[in-house]
Amino acid sequence: MPKVVFKYFSIKGLGEGGRMLLAYGRVEFEDHRVTEEEWPDLKTQTPFGQLPVLEIDGKQYAQSLAIYRYLGRKFGLAGEDLEEDFQIDQVLDFFYDIRLKAAEVFHETDKELQAKMQDDLIKNYYPIVLKKLDDIIIENNGHLAVGKLTWADFLFAGMYDCFKMVLGIPDLDEKYPSFKKLHHTVVSLPGFEEYCKNAPMCEF
Amino acid sequence: MPKVVFKYFSIKGLGEGGRMLLAYGRVEFEDHRVTEEEWPDLKTQTPFGQLPVLEIDGKQYAQSLAIYRYLGRKFGLAGEDLEEDFQIDQVLDFFYDIRLKAAEVFHETDKELQAKMQDDLIKNYYPIVLKKLDDIIIENNGHLAVGKLTWADFLFAGMYDCFKMVLGIPDLDEKYPSFKKLHHTVVSLPGFEEYCKNAPMCEF
Image (cartoon, rainbow over all chains, first blue to last red; front, side, top):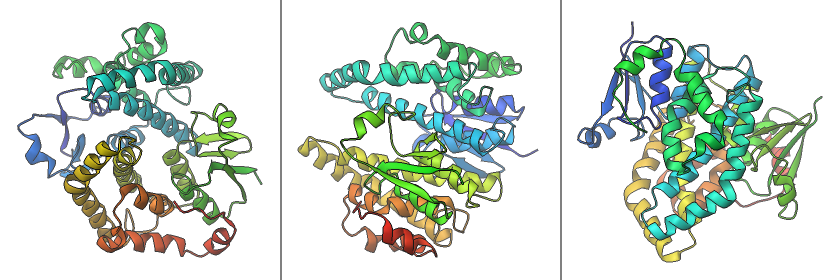
């Protein structure tokens, strides 16, 4: 059995989907929640100065999407062919685009500018892209791509609480019920009870 | 023979690597350079309101990384196994992180703030990440990953002129000769002469 360590901060964010994929794949892993104190030293030892990092027998895997794709393909959660893999990749890159725009506003320290940016997204961006994402999930039978459970769904479900927070849309669950439903589909999969029971709680 | 159309603006940016991959794969394709006049109408017909879009017999493929990965795997330019594919994905996500930081500053309209942001990147960010990228290329035998030519190299080479422009580091070629060398390796591959001769010129 290889020694597996998953390193990420004690939030869901870009890491929870990875932990969930490992739990789903029945991999025993060390769930290393990196503290603020540890981070400066650890940062210099990671491939790109970022988390999450997946370590398998000392070999480091970095970049959330790359890690999730790797685990997804390993655990039979990828597409059946190149076309299906493309569908998964495409929708996740789109999802990351939305997340990135939201995060940019969320992290803006100038409060006045932040309000202006958020107002612009609420009026001109979110209605289009969130509707699109909603359509995609509905078209795909409640999943992100290819009409069935793939690693993309784990990424979405793991990040959903964080996604809601950075979007700053309080009634997101009601506006787009497909999002909440997809989250529920994944966290209700058999085998997650134990992971959820033992994982440290974190809100987003 | 399927009808293939590659749609992108008349710049290299996020599209040139895709055109190069198609040319390398000996695919006859319509190189549709989208004009400013065309864009508003076309935008609503794309999967996510963005370019590039690859169209194969009317089916649309969007998101640059997803398109390039798909073409790379199709043309035998991917890894030999999951580990190698991971190496490719990881380094490209890292490269996109750098590009994104640079583009954020490049597109900042407040000139004073822009200068401050650029100063911060030049002092605290670029020396670390560009050195890292340089090390990776040197370790990989002049390539981005797995020690040989992969679709990652096409993405890098196609974007290099644009990357240089948004970074705003005039002596980039001299500071990190591995970058220029990798660009040269790709554009010197057999078969590119014809593509380069016929493609509209664009600077970045």
